[in-house]
Image (cartoon, rainbow, N blue to C red; front, side, top):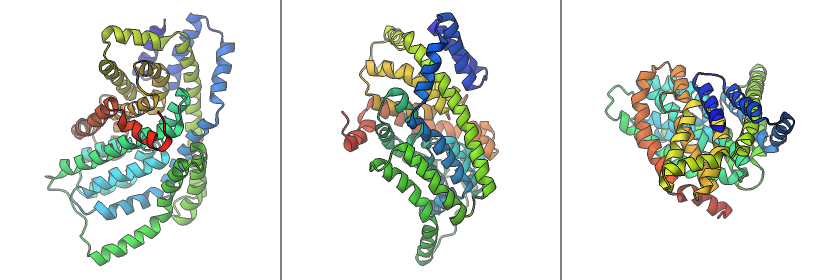
Length: 432
């Protein structure tokens, strides 16, 4: 029965049924066939949703919209452009680093792609970058928002898995930084022989210094935002939820009065969009909470573990199979939905074979990030292509290169070398 419920969920996702309804279909099947009482399950879902931790999700969604409309992302890009923008391939590096910085504030790959992409795509096109390369690079870089904290999916993972939010944040920092570096290196390598690239005009040292002071002064309020949020979280001054609320309160006056991009009408639009997105997410989370409870009552993790151990008893082999499953889930659904499905099912399996829950947080994050840009589904890659006007066929080659020489090495090291994800949580928090 439990396998049929899982097949119903996967089939619904594959044929294009909206994610919340796919979860509800699987839930209703188990309730009817398993004769479970809704009077028990409905209050359980509500009790799980009644937590302050979840408030961080709509607040970070709102902060991302405010930064996009308030021209805050533009200031971050201009600042990064000073250092590498005049090298061959430097504008691509600006795009990667800007996505990493923006993602460290919003924790969302879609918000990062929408904001930074709207600014960088025209610049990259004017500089002679092929549309397919630009779309692939931006799609891969936008996913850094999943890994570089604060991350929405790490908040959800910690909530479902009963782990420390800060420890989960720290687990993906090193993989995120390494991935950023590899994307920059790969971009330089991929465009090194492109004769069509147009480089920015070289500036004399004196002019460069004046430009740095001018842009640095203007970008200071924008640059202070990630310092304030991350410093406050890691310094123990406030929780991730409080940091998310502070980012919203900070972005409104900065976007309105410092950079002038945010108006009353655009503020209202951001709030309405955030409310709509939040409503969809919360309905889905409610359905997933009930479904995950049914999975546990049906002993699904143990049954899957027995199935996996019948195939192989090797820890390396089981982790390999789990990675394939997580990548497929990342291809089929958005990152929030995927983490809500994978955590209650796979975390018990991972801990049963000796994987630390914080280590598994990093494995999950890298897998779901790669799934978002892995063909044939690749939701973030398709979104990037639509925003840039690039044909999906033109994005495949550069995407596969970034997967082969960026994502795959990071996933391998993250999976089989636990210290990559556990070193920082142990150093900062002393976890064992």
